[in-house]
Length: 285
Image 1 (cartoon, rainbow, N blue to C red):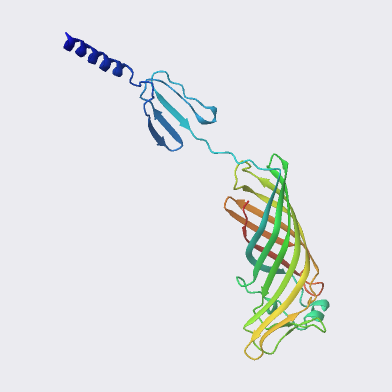
Image 2 (image 1 turned 30 degrees about the horizontal axis):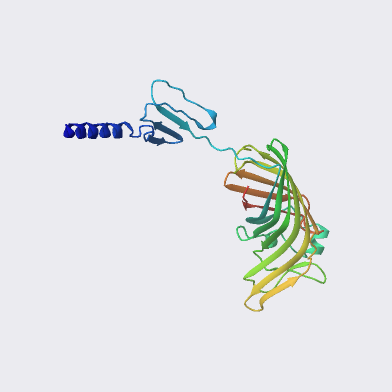
């Protein structure tokens, strides 16, 4: 009798333990990621469907959840600032001088256009903008853009010309130079109207156009020859102290291009040379 009671008691304990096993924990789900979609298949018989950006794909016949990840929109502030922008490009001039005119012959006696020819690919332009700022005007599509920085222009001459100081004239030297460069540096303030064709992206696609005003703060001619070695002459060389230019910028995502074309001459008088620059802009915009 006692054995029967003990057997019944053991059976009841086993049944009680089985009844208390946890069946409330959800089972794991299979997850498949395809591109920007996440597909989740559940195994607990319950259906739970979520979709990012409040988009749901409802299907009552299965337990599959489809999540679609959308590109995050880049929220821009109404005023943004970009520090230390660098331009690397080329300098050149559009020479429309009448070399037979009396004023030209007085400044460059016996000179010709060929004697003032500039070496293409060797005349370098480097601009360093301390800052550029962009102000939203119309839904970040139309913006006002301005900045402050320095323009460094190097004009390399092919011939052996030299800038005189007293008097300020240009003449052909009797020796051959291995290096002949005129440097003109300006403090410049550009103001542009910017058009951004992708305002919801961090890297923009668009263009800018406007005007800049630069003041000549330094000018020098660097010469190098086997006979005299290195020479460095500092003067204003009859250069125009103000440089007013039409400026533009083309934004192609990660690539930014810039250009400028002066609205006045490089020299005060004597020559009709209009400087221009173009190249690549390294900017975080």
